[in-house]
Length: 282
Picture 1 (cartoon, rainbow, N blue to C red):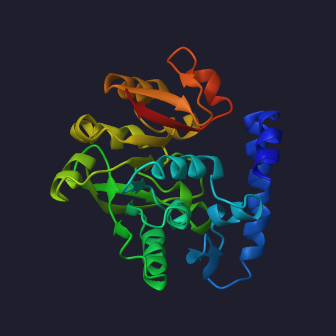
Picture 2 (tube, rainbow, N blue to C red; picture 1 turned 90 degrees about the horizontal axis):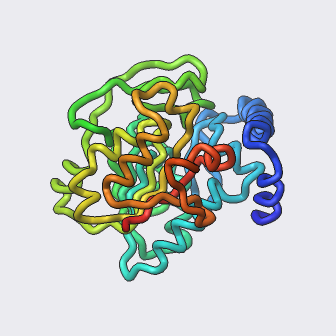
Picture 3 (tube, rainbow, N blue to C red; picture 1 turned 45 degrees about the horizontal axis):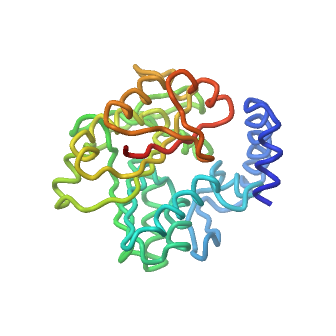
């Protein structure tokens, strides 16, 4: 089914595909309004908690696995490691974390989610499924500097768009203060654990996260899966070129999930059909 979907997707312009998905999600959210505020769903063999109208969960009506291509890629990478460790930055309600644990049950995951609603739901999932031996949840934002920072939260259906800046892609935002750390600071305080894979989906703040990880990248050299979405980056003081350039300057190469090499001259064309990339240490 995934191969069929990807084949269809490859022949449809990204803006039109995104429109189709948004319509499907909208219809799902409409039906969700008649349900209880807090819901559970069986996903990847666990009971996962989510909030009514959650647009990320709505995608599961048309996608059996959330961000399947990326998740399968991450799992394939982790399965090659003897003791696999993942940093899930922007964990939301735990869909990526849940999938990884199903496929690589002996893996260990550091999950980071500053959104209070999402983080509390993920905490419930961890407790209900006795995942505390495999998942360590941090209810903070990873950024360029440690301290506190304004965080923009959305209504239920747009909470996947919560972030350090308001991208304007969701409905009305409410500003809250959240604790921030850098990857470098967290990593040192945690005793410099080994990390195999880092997944970053922070609604445009990806470069802030990377800038706070300079020592970590040099010493650990993890494989990085990250979202590069120009529509999110419009709110940020940098572009997709800056993200790629930063990775290149830190001795990483950038590829699509299908293995195509991405350079500065070609990144714009790849962004027409891709929003998730993998950075591999050279």
